[in-house]
Length: 428
Ligand SMILES: NC(=O)N[C@@H](CC(=O)O)C(=O)O
Ligand SMILES: [Zn+2]
Ligand SMILES: [Zn+2]
Image 1: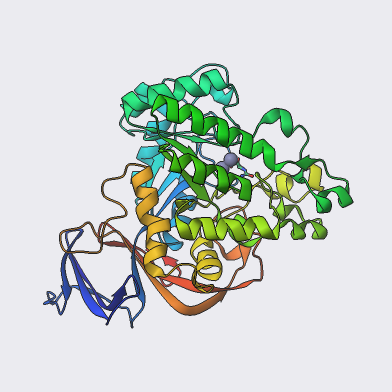
Image 2: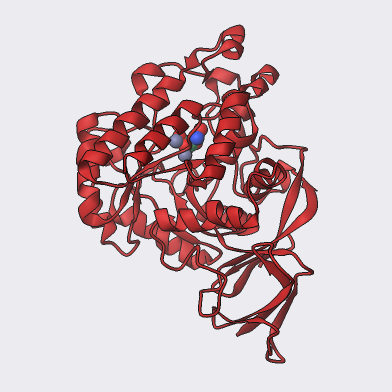
């Protein structure tokens, strides 16, 4: 089975080249001799990138298959340019044991559109009381590499310390949803002028920053790896810079929505904008963009969070937090980081593919576009634009905050181990 991508610009650099792929591996770059029966993808000078890796996706299977399944979520991922996603553990039942994580992994392989790596829960039932069997999940068929109670914070410092200590022996990473629960009781929106005016209980920046600071110190002393989920405040970026400076093995992600959107959106009262952590201020968003460009924040992760209409399209305080992200991530990164000159396409490859693959410990993802490397690839038309329509996205749920927005950057093809998984907006 061979494929040739004609006239692509790897990392958006240099003159267009042809890329030959045979048996899932890149076997030629430049002027290549393609077999007659090779599948041809005309790239017309489009940007070729390593396939994207999402460290933070909610696929809702098992338990809420009315909002997303591994099948529909995989389709959204492939269309968004992803070749691997990490599916969060806050399903029902919780992915806190080998049976569930193996189901998620196997189902992902059956669907075959993207590698679905299950995230294992840190604590049994996400209850924050006792550690789940991290070792059993790490050694299961799914080979769990990332553990998180995401949705909830591992708030007990002793439990968090133990999890970090265990993680070193297993060579896995603990991903923390940094939210001090005592500081966010009833919290609805970023604590500031805008929430105050609407009478919403505030979600203070310190609820995030205090946990990130604490966990960085715990990780440093345990010589363990820590990953910080969905960084949302400028203060967290400062804490991360300080911790990295001191040699802490900490990595961090930012979501597309925290790069673009702010709590100005509260004025619409539309719960599509409700998310955890909440949308912050313009100066926070600006700081997150520079922190991402400078590597203080390592990567972009979607926190793709599908919700049913009845759980989302309600009065603000009753609505579930979270928004879709897989199919819009590249465009939001193009809008906030590339158009602004903060990142070039090589930088996009770093924050959407290479760094997340390293953090998630995936040997075959985020690899260089070079002969002998696995053909996990994404082709992007940097000049094209599209208009977001929630109803047209592959997810079952439609809770996108970008409804009706015209965005730059279109994913035109995704290849998983040399096989087309998405082409011109359609799943293959
Ligand atoms: N981000 C959200 O607002 N919601 C996530 C949970 C989470 O990421 O904390 C969800 O599972 O819906
Ligand atoms: Zn979270
Ligand atoms: Zn999440």
